[in-house]
Structure formats: C-alpha cells, structure tokens
Length: 449
Image 1 (tube, rainbow, N blue to C red):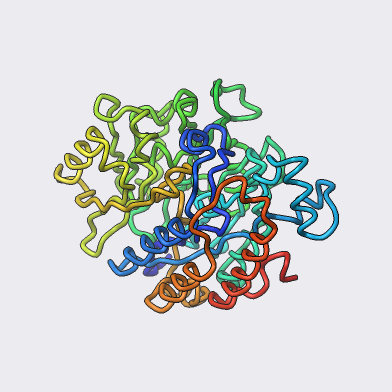
Image 2 (cartoon, rainbow, N blue to C red):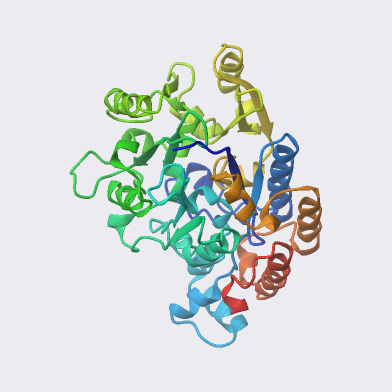
C-alpha cells in the first residue's frame, strides 16, 4: 500500500458560555477541589483560542470544535420539568439545583473525550473512523454525544472519506471516554500504525480495580470501538491502567501518558503488566519497520501527585518540521520545581523531545483539563483534509471572528448560582446560532431543529 502524506490535525474544543466550577467530576482532583470558585468564561475561551492560534502560527495544523447548548433544557424536560424554558430552569433551580448544574456544564470543551478516531491508514475500508464517546460514568457528560456527533458529521461530512459511529450503549459495561484513553504509535502519520487502547477495568475479567475513584474506560468498550473501526488485531493493543494511580486522580490515561509517532511519554507507574505489553507493542510496530520509543518518567523525579497537580502528561507532543518533537504543557508545570527541572533535563537529553512550550490555561486547569484534554487528534491525508469543512480550520480570519464572537457574547464572571438565570440560555442560543454560521456547521443544536 502506497503511503500518503498525512498530518495530525488537533481540533480543540471551544470553551462554552456556561464554563463554571460546579465540581461535578468525582475522581478529577482539580474539578472537585475548585468547586464554588468564580469562573471567567470569557477568559477561558480566549485562553483556548490563543493556544489554537499560536500553534497554528507555528505551522501545526489546527481545527476547532464547537461547544454545546447549555443549560440543556431538553434533558430537564426528559426528567419531568415542564412549562416554558424559563419555567423549566426555575423549577430545576429550586427543586434540583444539582441537576441544573449538571445540564449546564461546559465540559464538552474537553474534546479529548468527544470521540475515538482511527486514521484511514489503519482501517480496512481506508476511511477515517469516528466513534462518539458515551461518557456514561458522569451524567453531565453523558448528555453530550448527540450534539458531538452532529458537529463531527458537519465537519467531516464526505462519506467517501469519513465513517461515523454512534456512541456505544449507555451502560457501565460499555464505559467509553474517547481519545483520552487511546494512543496511536507509528513511524509517520500516513503509515500504518499500532493503536493502543488503555482501559481502567475489564467487566468480564475479574481484574484488580481502583478502590477510591471509578475506572471510567472498560476493555469491552475499547474492543467494541476497535471492531467498529475495522482495525486488524495485529495492529491493536489493549493496556490496563494502574488502578493505584487512578485512585490518586488519574481519571484518564492522558493524565499519565501521551504518545506521538513512535514515542510513548509515560510515568513509571502508569500501567500494569507494562513490560509484557510493551514487548507486544514493540513486536507489532516492528512489522512496519518502526522502532517503539518509550520515554519513562521515574517516580523518583516526578511523583504521581506532581503529575496530577501539574498535568505534565496531559500535554501535547507535536512533531516539528525538523522531525524532532515539542511538548506543550500548562503553566502549572513550570511553577512546580521538580516537574520543571525534569522537563529541562528532558529537552537537553538528546532524545526526540527537544523543546517545551508553556501555555496559560488556568481556567481549564482549575476545572481539571490541561492542553491534551482540550484537543481531539485527527490524522488526515491531503485528500481528507480537502474534504473536511474548511471553516473549522484555524487561520487568521477564523481567529479574528471567534475572538470577536467571544468578546461579544461571553460573560466575564459566572458562579454556580448564576446558572438559575434564564437569560443565560438566551445568551447561549443567540451565540451558538451565530457560531454555526461562522463555522458553516448548519443546524447541529436541538434549538435549531
């Protein structure tokens, strides 16, 4: 099979208008510890846009995914609230404020959980496959899949190049958290690679599970996604997270490991049966004349606690024009002396990673999401890139339009109490109606249909 030129396009989630700190994500230390803090949705969205534009200006291909309609009145109606939209919100605020907080979450900003994506080089039908994540471990995220699917289909609409799959059944057995638990290893993006699915528990396996926090991804879900994407068994590996680190706040694999090309940057305590599975990866990659390059961060240099607190591993590894890699980390990594010392040692070690780029993503970080949470990696060849919606790809014009859109529509202060304001829904719908026109998405939201 001939190898086509391909690129990793990072589609970042645009932070939604209801970004707030309601502390909804049990198992995510940052999310629960910042409950009731005052959020700034405008700053959060602008911070995310600045990251997208900076990386785009550096030559990396960058896309945008839209936020969701919030509060989700449709969900509240399914739960028995009735009347006008304003009355539904008022009833929920009075009788079930926690439900209102859940249906108002801006958590769709973390699009690493939006879907799992397999590039055409790996799939039997040579199409890019998308499976929307069901996110059924958290109620506030389990209501995202329909709109997420609509958005992905609006951006990747050409059936000659793209295949879309609905979320797996909304049941604990099929707990699927998307690309946050998925890695792809390869020699170059356009070549066949090995897809590594990381899971926290095996429902039918009786394996050791975390005792304090939930294991959100099941092996059964990962295996289902691999089948849907028509992946060959010789190109897939299933790797279990260490349950002890899940109990320390590693709620997704991307809090403890990140991959790019042949490199897997990971913590010493990230996985169980690590040596055995790494041998399997090494063997399967070897079939494609690709040398597996794990970079292990020792516990003696960076503890799991430091990794979770700084999101060192919730970083992006990006291949530069010269073939070397840059690691993108949040400001919190620079502020931690041990982590920053390690990063400086890493980039001067002579290995594949020789540059570090720091972004201020405080608003997202306080809610439990770093650079890697904010992006969905989509590998596209030239034909597929041309077939994608060009209005969703970052450039000077889109950055200006989206910045002006945020400045026009977003509040600069939001607390959990503000979610009871019915005007927030009006503001959300007005803004999203305008956004779908800017990005050429059509009618992807319930209120537009």
